Length: 228
Image (cartoon, rainbow, N blue to C red; front, side):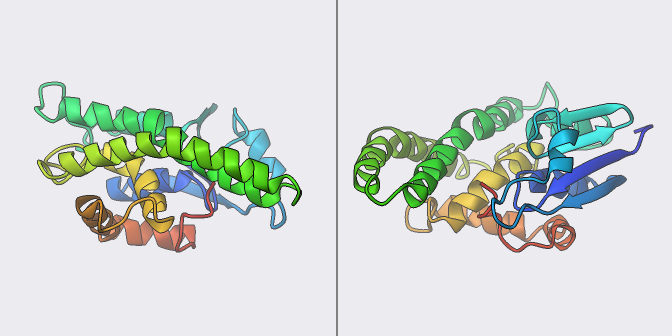
């Protein structure tokens, strides 16, 4: 990299996986940490003005400001040609890697976000509206959200039975991208040992990586569960 990469890291946010991957790559980068508003848990104004979308994560490199976790991680991988976190085009793991790289953001994250939004909405509504909203969100979760999430997790459980990582035989960027989904899912009891033992074992193996300890120390937080 010619220009120094700067990760603008918001506490309790999805930028943790970018920070984690940077530590795994042992890349050279600058880190700027922002605290959320104590009352609203929203990003501070200086962060919102920096990000093209007003959301975390955001990375700057020279005159470039880039949002979206997967885009930032692709940029980092492109700028780190010696890295081994992305299977080559001729690798037998390439298709598997691509699937989970896109499933993390395109399929799994929207479902988990919907579960979170419905939970938060129930807590913040006026008391007289809560029974009606609870009934609606319960039906939405049982008929739409949870069945789809179960299918994704079942496929993850199956795939982890054929190779140890989401990217195949070797640890890959797909593992770092989906780590947020999986670890938060485990912290919120969306994933458990009884139904998804291989997924839980994968979570433990990811957390055992030295790069996780380094990223956690720089992040200063022990849990991702408040991130959304």
